[in-house]
Image (cartoon, rainbow, N blue to C red; front, side):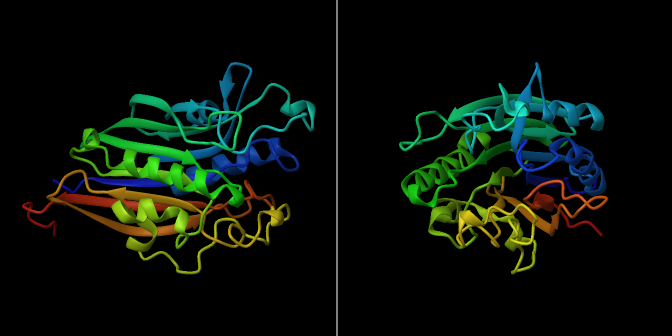
Length: 279
């Protein structure tokens, strides 16, 4: 029997911000189809008129989807265009396999008048339950107390003993902090950065200043940094997890960038220490 495996993607898909959001939707879908991930953590996902962007992509892919809101950033107030009126902004998970459990968990946000959430889910991977946490963290670097508290919450969720089992635990999302930022210290202390483990390029960027609508006002802590991440830990003490590759996705499709962020895609394979190696 081959070792269990998984391709995971995380991507901030830019809600309905920027110009011509409708024209970007085919490029998002085409990028997902090109990279064929099994599970996809999405941030800045819209919900409106009884459906969500995640549900529409899931229908096109034959996947399963769950959506939770609110998330960062807050929807514009007042609305900037009619396309923003009454539209939610949240996070979502797409999965090739059924999503058997999910819940929205409020994150600490002392500086906000609303309660952003993280999405905790369990996916029916062929090897067994696959625990996944999806989140988008506070983007205002001024509020680093909230950013640290939110990262600590994700670390706690990612190491919950209830998630122990036959599959690794994944924490994925736009964490609005560079890989070496102090904000991510709670995650680095107890989880593993899949990008580093998979020998991803050390100079990789997921919020590039070269994008035509790059949010340059976010400053050097976020712009031209790798701020979108996949962290993981083995499902039990005898599990060996190998990240076989780590790449960036999200180039322009037919001349249009699908998002102002790039996606992170990582391939995982795992086995027990006592199992004989394959090959």
